[in-house]
Length: 340
Image 1 (cartoon, one colour):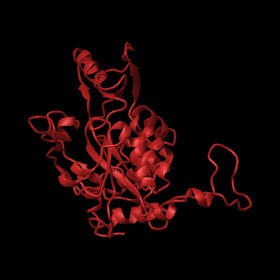
Image 2 (cartoon, rainbow, N blue to C red):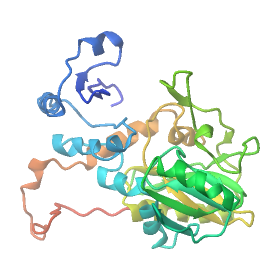
Image 3 (cartoon, one colour):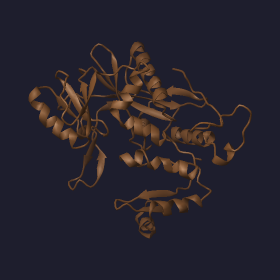
């Protein structure tokens, strides 16, 4: 790294897969459509693959497809599938982070037919969705039925969450440092003054063309680095590092944070994924500190993923004291330290 050749495992909407060296139309047209097992057989024969960077952001892509790296025994940048399954579930992830002292809004888990016990105003959102799909701010009881109908179209489990009055809307994140220390990224602030509602909806995050066939980033008013005083900075730092460690995230993670008018931050949700495109949140936040550059962070995390990977063959040795029993026998234990 950084001079790399690409091997692309491409998922098609009809359920077939292709292995290609490029995404240009000519290469894709020539690439054979295969079943996933057949595509993986091709990749197992390529010993030159150094690491894997996931670029699928539907549920299966973020969860089960990440396990391809385990099947192929190659390093992967980012959190493994089991962590993504946890963080994709808003109810479960908030339960984990709150157990270590991270502040979260009051909430209720809803299934079809459950009675809402929380007073208005509150937020209704699907537990296992992204980009604010199905999210609604309920300010009057007359709005409840429509909000539930919309959210249940996306998931059979909903989060009914206390509405935190808008003070500030922030995104915070951490990345692995060179010495296994967590580095706190420059903070990103979203400005909602032009929004119809005092929350970020799906229309504020993504947009489509007239045929709804192409997704793009919606225009956004944001700033990095945000202007943060020392007291709030420390609260945000603790929120991000505690969340990262308690959720078991790897290499990097991002968090949406709502700050009330009194300056109290609340964990809203975790986002431990990144495309590393120029407009992605992680890359945009890293530009707030000159030490990261545009691509330096990606290659640093790639090198770390490669260095930390322990191939299956290397696990056959059994030095004294190594764990050999149990469901997750490990050749070594690593610890991560945090520093502001």
